[in-house]
Length: 299
Image (cartoon, rainbow, N blue to C red; front, top):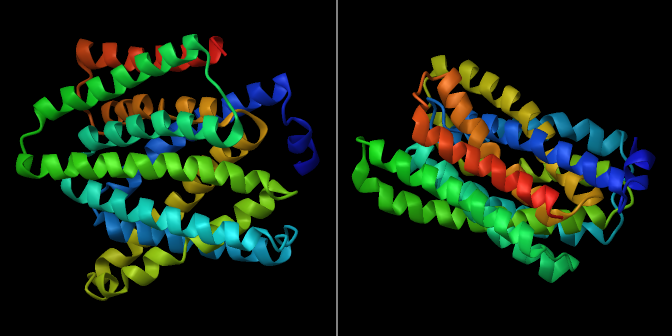
């Protein structure tokens, strides 16, 4: 598996596989966000997910994949810092704002900065047509956020700080997308990076939220941990897919394609939560999908 993935790097087949992985990550990331924004405190939900995927990753990191090369440990330390900042900003965002409003802002801010970062770090450059696709995609994403904002009636006084935190979270998304792409390319075996990343990344939130766990009603522990285990497997396939996509394909393209997660989040809200889509939201979702298609075809 590792040899096959490595052989795809820099090839046309690799770009096609990377596109499929990025779209898979988009769907699963929307599901992951919905799991964290569920009925439990978003800090607790994230802690349950993190401890679950750290414990699952532990035996794979220690006994299955090759051990990281010495130069990887500072890279893991940097990833830990960036992802910790992302998680704190994300929890602050979800704690204050309606999911339908803040999620598109987070996902819309991320790819713009990620494309710039990919150009500076990896020498990737979008064509004018691809930048046009980015504009179309971001127009749909932020248009969806504004449309959803008009319908919010609860805690409207918290929406301004929530949107501010959403922009900060989007900046962290761009930072970890670019940095993790660098990290997974820095080791011979990409699965070494994935296993150790999930093990190290899962340590902060359970410790940080320890006092909250002590006040959690006993009847809520099992449901929350079940959510954590489900979220862990979603995280493996979501974050794992996008990390592999950035190794074998272009970082900027993968970052943009992943943001079609906004479309999937709207579909989840419609199919699972019974939210009404309507012609305006449908048009905005089509814009997002069209922007992603343009980025791919104009490359």
